[in-house]
Length: 254
Length: 320
Ligand SMILES: Nc1ncnc2c1ncn2[C@@H]1O[C@H](COP(=O)(O)OP(=O)(O)OP(=O)(O)O)[C@@H](O)[C@H]1O
Ligand SMILES: Nc1ncnc2c1ncn2[C@@H]1O[C@H](COP(=O)(O)OP(=O)(O)O)[C@@H](O)[C@H]1O
Ligand code: SF4
Ligand SMILES: [Mg+2]
Ligand SMILES: [Mg+2]
Image 1: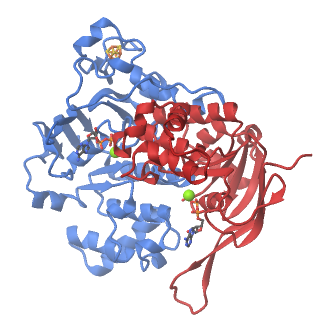
Image 2 (image 1 turned 135 degrees about the vertical axis):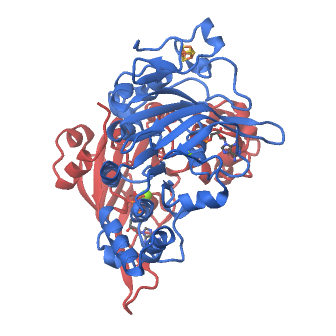
Image 3 (image 1 turned 90 degrees about the vertical axis):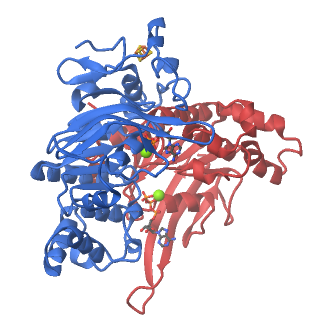
């Protein structure tokens, strides 16, 4: 069998808490022996209660945060610490992740220029990237505050895709959006998967969204993956008691 | 009725353009009733909710209209009188709990002070109420948490403290603006159940602002749908969300992923919400409406649809 696109093995992460009453140092174990893999083009969902370690996993996978233990691998080869051009991240609030004083076009071309993917005249490149996320070329000249929430979310995705990643890590990328805009963003992610064969590590507390987008789902509790299963199976017959509790808490529309 | 809002209109004058943000909003909430205010971002939900508590910034002007809480007209009250109401007869919970919590006071001090500021009780009784308020919101080890500062709690815990503070004086009206939007499903379900039970037990009227229709469906008795600064549909939550009458409500429901086949293309709307500076003439949904006709240029009024529902559309999807 060929190796997966991306994998983490026995990943652990401890945070030191400042202060505290005792003399001993206090640790929080945010991640505890997390092992999972993502195939090329696959969408892996991560769900779990607040504080269970989802964002920590996202930041370590992307290389924004060093792990305390464990390894990452890319196509079977061990990865050095730090960012990797093949993995990009879309943040929870795409709006606040953009630089308010920089035109949209500049923000999209910034990293590709730095990496030497394009030369000094990036206008055509920017227009192409905007078109990919369903925005007209004229948006390149706008500032973030001149965009709607949904348009900003699209720019956040365009910026992450500009480096041609094979894996996109989305941490609550649609949580702050209302349903119509959320539907537009989810449709966009689906079409990018079809067209570019993009793989997703998709974190969300909205189980309906995860079920819609993901092929497989990992359930996290207190820093550990307690269940990982094909989405269809997981939502129909959850095996772990915590997964059952999580599923039964979801408000549904008849 | 605990709350009666009549013909509330709000506008925000700017140097170049005036935003006509809220237009002629009327609704009432009965004791123990939970009303959800839903609609997309920018539709005017927050401005409407804050107007009830007198909390909008000075730039937001009220143009006529009346707000009565337990029969008392709030639009006539001074800022001082409003401050006396807030935290007692009326409480507000925001999406970010730090908007109401003080970072330099312990949880116990904040809750006790809220009681002491509005109720004639001693310190001991105030503390006892603080503990039971924390117990009620399901905070583990409430006695211990009294000594914690907000930054020593997780996000979900902080929101529960903010809700405990809002309910501690048993207000007649609770206003919540996206109060559970940032929380995970288990925590959200727990808080909604708690607020509902409290409302029913104490006759609290609840206005729950959310963009999550599933929350509205599972939690509210009645729902108000807002679009472009106007109420466009109101009625019992189960009926409105099962059989929407307004094309916009139908579009919101169609866009929800959990109702679609996994992986399928989700239904969306073309275009953008209307620019409200000034609002377009005619039906404000016309540009995006899949069933718009020439008549819609006239602009429909919010009218009764049977005994319990209202809709602002010439061609509602449900008749009576
Ligand atoms: N910089 C930090 N310092 C100390 N503790 C931290 C830090 N970052 C995260 N933690 C702790 O690590 C644990 C996991 O946090 P993480 O942000 O990964 O949770 P999450 O699953 O993303 O939660 P949410 O759904 O609320 O976003 C929590 O207990 C959190 O308090
Ligand atoms: N301080 C302000 N200045 C100018 N416009 C504002 C201000 N506050 C709100 N608005 C506008 O009023 C409308 C309604 O806003 P809001 O009530 O916050 O919407 P919602 O809560 O439904 O997302 C929006 O068009 C918004 O841009
Ligand atoms: S009045 Fe006309 S345009 Fe407006 S919602 Fe009804 S059908 Fe659509
Ligand atoms: Mg997180
Ligand atoms: Mg709002």
